[in-house]
Length: 218
Image 1 (cartoon, rainbow, N blue to C red):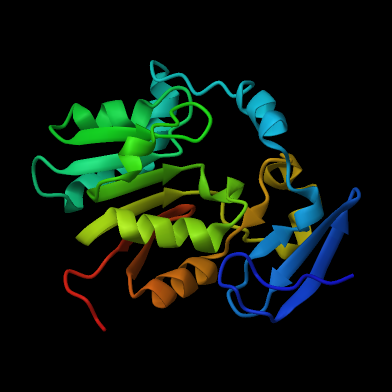
Image 2: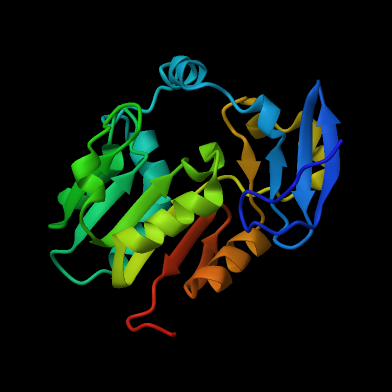
């Protein structure tokens, strides 16, 4: 039983972490990411059926409060009238609406619900990924794409549940969603930022802000 490389940082120092209810998970000793065996990655059809069960209503005040954990610190850092992308926005793009209400513009991209490839043909001052990165089948590729989509000095805001308790992983509710295929620790995001020459702020549990440098470091 082997996994060739970590899908987050592409390092080869990967070990078996756990098998839980027939699902095999690996751990990268370089970036501390935990990920499901590639043989168990869900199909697009299975993902779509699961996502349609989500109840993320843009009119729900409690859901907007949840999104404000990312929106408010991001807004504190943005100059007026910035251009953004809600990447993996899902069927109800509440966060984009919230940011537009403060004077920013926000385009939408989601491979299942808003598959507008033209949104990937320009660059942005900020990008948001709320409850998205845990679904990435190829995270290293996705973060490199996000880097290309960000303008120099641009911000990337991420919300995902951090894996804080290895001992409780098998029974963790977040793990039991089969569309969640990669799990991040704080260390994982710091490693991603280092690889891409970004800065990284862990603002709250499960909330990360990263920034692309204003000038090239190469």
